[in-house]
Amino acid sequence: MNVSPEIILFAKAALAGILGFCVGWERELHGHAAGVRTIALITMSGTIITGIALTNFPVADRLIANILTGVGFLGAGLILHGHNDEVFGLTSAAAIWAMTSISIVIGLGHYLLGIGLTGFVLLLLWWQYLPLPAWCNPAPTREKIRLWRKAQESDSGQHEIH
Image (cartoon, rainbow, N blue to C red; front, side, top):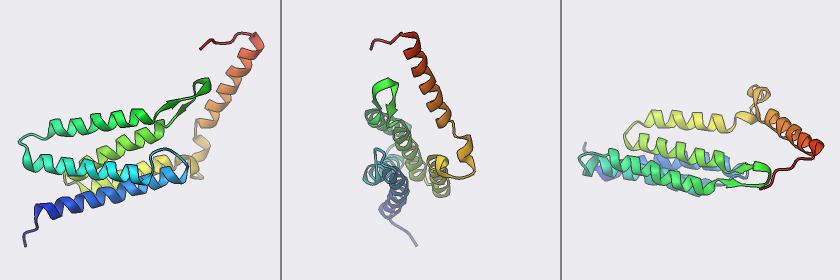
């Protein structure tokens, strides 16, 4: 039985969209930037562009590289710098880029690898909420260091000028 290439590409895009939905749901659940719709749309489009590049162009590597570059710029727009050198949106930007890579993997036809890598991305995003690895999370240590530096600046009377 011959299946139309368009149906195969649609199935690949649907799988990528579902995986992107899962990661977007995690981001949205925790109130972070780039939620369900954003990541699902990015993963679907990355898979579609990769699939079309494979079937319609002699060499697909340039188009695939441009997918990653374009999404890199999108992710850069998510990263914000706040007061006291705080950075927001970095993990969401990294999640978008990782899911774009996974969408390319799915577009290339490596479905199980894409599903497994999405599970690994979710594990990394949920790392701090899991009971066993939570104790080795360096975030509390970073917060302690930041508070210590702030106390040192106020004790010495030196303040940075921004």
